[in-house]
Length: 357
Image 1 (cartoon, rainbow, N blue to C red):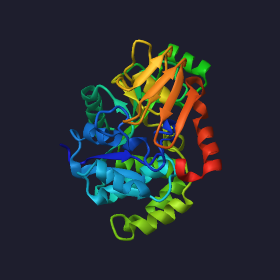
Image 2: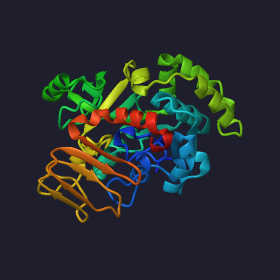
Image 3: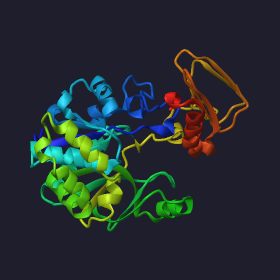
Image 4: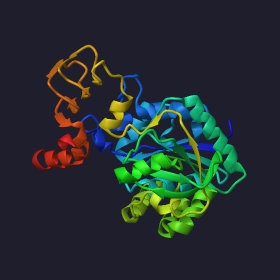
């Protein structure tokens, strides 16, 4: 293994779109949604462990999830978990990892990955990552991984390639288009889903941050002496208290002129919504995604049903519904109204407080 290759796992999100299964107290990345016996963050670690030495993993997460990270990835040392005092989107998250890593190893190559995605063909995926690690060795570029779109999805960002080469310069990024535009993108053949997986040399991403996010560069550079010391926690709290929240896509990738993409098709999903989970899940002959042994359905079609392990359910007469039962919350809503879940959370919070968030 290349000792200069590091993997940064971003694990700070709250996973609200999979509420009430995913909660702020235990978000999606720490759940075993598919019943495999392994959480998303565990699967993410194992996916990259064949490419990256154990000591070269870094997890950036909210301070309240530190113990959960170490529980799910016990191979890591406590020093490998970087704790954000508050969420500020992906640019500050990546800056924290990059500027900290620069102090550890200025020659580092970074793989940056979300902690909560599903990849079905892992060998093909690792081959692509290895290919991109080789590519950045000889080029000062920012790499991202694109996915061949299987449908006009409005919840993903899109990347337009500039040519038909396997590794291509990015022409433009488009965030979450409307349905008509998404249909055009899929038909065009030049647009690919943005996976949110990045590969670059640490010096190249820091150069890009200095150019396109100078205020972030100034903040994270100002605490260089604190990284890896007892003063890091206090210094990071100060930086994050004044740091502007912005995604790496908006802040850097959409502006930089050295962004390249490698597109592939390896069974990817961000499993970010009940709808995307429904697409991946095993279904019965009536297209219901549900537990096989304790959910009895009658005249019910195209539903996704999630139950506690010991719960038995009888459901009759539903078409295209989401039914999620937990110990303290039952949610039943049409699949077509899934975008209202954040509204439901806010309403429950207003009447019941934070305990169900």
